[in-house]
Length: 217
Image (cartoon, rainbow, N blue to C red; front, side, top):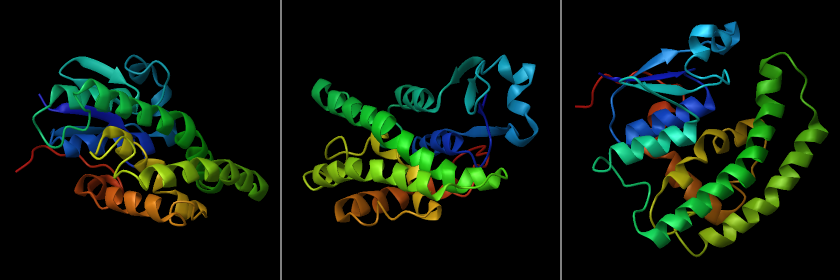
């Protein structure tokens, strides 16, 4: 049975999961959950995702939600397909988890807030607050200054091998230029790192919207 990915084709977190499915060459069917019509709050969906958010997966009856947890599950289930993405060595794994924690707690809250302020808010009929946006970016900049230093010493955020910690940055990081910020491009090491990530076929396949992939040739 093909894995079912419940989500919205253009949602950031749905794209995060689909990207990893592409990295691991796992066929999947996208089941569109239309946030605009409130489909994510319907009882049938809440049975799968009780918090009423996207995405979640149904892997032959195994239901799982939270995009980063789903990505880790996919990597664990398909260790021999594509790049490892999660190191097995205890020390390398600890460095991966360290970088993943930084992404989730230091990068994502600010990058997502910036995108919400200048992209999602007007999309839903609201008015962006330029001062609020400036304050968000002002908080993000010193975080990325540390990234700049780290990435001047190693290729990726968790070391010299690509991991999920790197890929997790793509959904919101890729939207920062459209939101009106050059915080990534302004830092050479960060720009080099993010440019490489952005050119990966897995991201190219989902960056403009997720589509079902019944099989891989």
